Image 1 (cartoon, protein in one colour):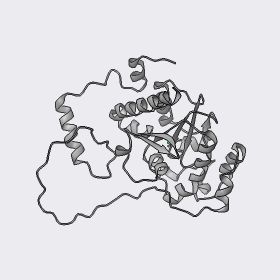
Image 2 (tube, rainbow, N blue to C red):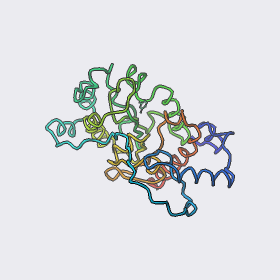
Image 3 (cartoon, helix red, strand yellow):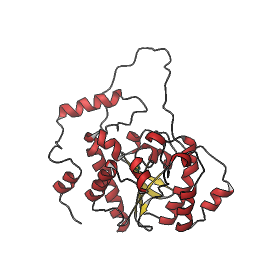
Image 4 (cartoon, rainbow, N blue to C red):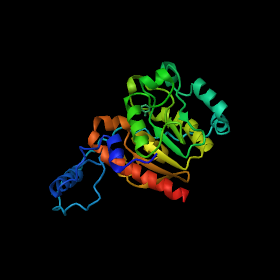
Length: 270
Ligand code: URA
């Protein structure tokens, strides 16, 4: 599918509201970026900020860091070894029957993922929500509709050379953040999915996917806008569609990330 630039921006909801920023707006944004705390998810601007006067001596600050969902390192168990050798049928059955964490008690069903098992494109989100828990398919709610629009913006469609999965296969109750031990318990499934799919490119949707796959606590605003690698596979980080629903102005940044992903895929194919 070939869309004009205006069509693509329309699909993302960026047209006709998208405007070139004036120099004053750019300067204001730089000032805000300079004031962002270390763990903010706002992306840093690329232009160098104006020099600032040396700060007056301060008492040592106490930094409160949010709990991070990084995988807790665990010794490879017999079970993890078995997961690493499963084919698709065994893997999906294992995910459905999984009791490796307490989320098994509250879920309606596990949500392994959906799409082309040999897709070039792999999109990875955080965890199923209420709709996904009910239907057994990832990204079927409002965030899913936006993800479909994002896919369409770069000429892709769910199931067509695209696989969609989550870090967690079971819904956290009341959509709370995943716990580190849940991420650690579930990651072997995603790792095996990636081995089976052998995607050319991974797009990590949101900070949980990005930080879990890259094993880092770097804020998403610093991870996006550059090409990473997950076990040798190029990986692009962008904002989660649910975040975009709450912060539509950041759609422009997602568009930049999509262009990076699309150009990277094109260069891999030529
Ligand atoms: N959010 C996610 O991260 N994944 C889904 O499947 C749905 C919403």
